[in-house]
Length: 168
Image 1 (cartoon, rainbow, N blue to C red):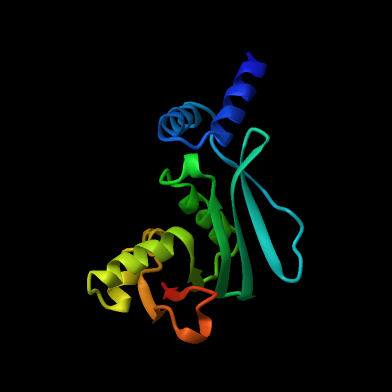
Image 2: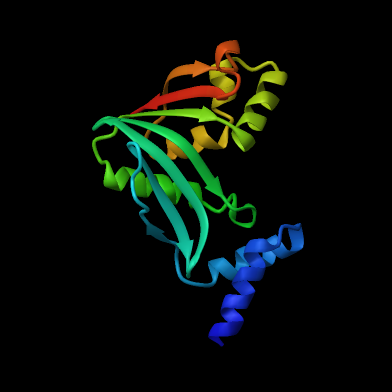
């Protein structure tokens, strides 16, 4: 049974089509919850891996600027597990470890950048467009709803992505 369980999970992690992703998510939801591991901190950057069994299904990398300010470098969830609240779980863990954080900086890339561009193309302001991103929605759920800075694709930071800064 354990071999079948591990084989099925590995199949889920590496399968990227819609049908197998749905089966994979159903499989994940029917099993134990996600756990966290904490790799070594390097150059002030901390990382948390989200694990299921012995498999990493996502991670978050961040830097604590001071006890109240956090810079997020990367939030990544493997494709079959996106949209299931794992980013929120990752943020909850970061905030549990750093309870005095009141300000979060994030450069939006990938899915967030796509959502931002779509909203801007619809004619929304930069701040309103930021509210349509998955990144903002997760932060808002966790009490960080006040946008204090929104830079939508400034030319001098095009490689880094748009900047979103939120506070409690």
